[in-house]
Length: 302
Image (cartoon, rainbow, N blue to C red; front, side):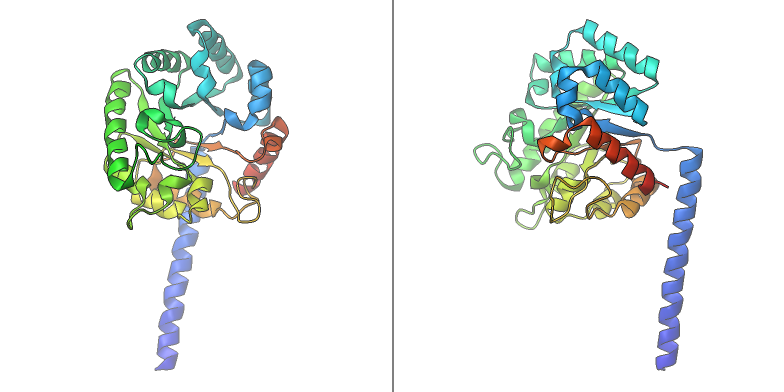
């Protein structure tokens, strides 16, 4: 009997290994035929961007970044500045995949301007950052809910209702809306995670921009979350995380299960592009770190 049980166990394990190998092979074939672009969230090069945006874009293009996500200060641009930036992107063959926005975007004055600038830049998505949106009742500049506005799961359900309302306005302008998580959304409240509540109370059209490192910091499983929300994880912020270095972990040097993340994102998540992100110490927000990230990325995707 023991021999039969061992044999059955062996066959199950062999079948699982064979299936995993098949998935890897199919993903490699699909990736070669239609590679998923890799980009960068521009906050990762904050200092250089602040000094010389155009030189920064040129440098990132030379490194091999194909997509850029502009961050909150873009809202201060004039339409003429946005047109100049769009021309540079077109000349370099780089595209603006999305913009990353905080509270001022979701105001009566800010949203129309954001829509106009995103249309000029060629962006498809207006992504809002959960921890920096007092308009949504979340505490600007912190990774925790503002207890005076968002309390418990009902508070996050109201956040979902607000996102749904804003998403309709964004869609009416021909764009899509996204929501970017931080660690707080993966910390359970009364047995439920706020991110799951937000996902359940927003339409499938609203993109869930998964930040892998933030998910892992709160002991979440990024692969499980992708599989639970098919077709909605159209961008992934590729930020690594590890207990030793925390957010200073460079992609490929932390504990994130990148191979499994890529497989889930490309088989069920509906990923359109990846965005490398690093929000560790100021010394890491540089072109030198962006170059190091790209080198690690190529190894991960080999």
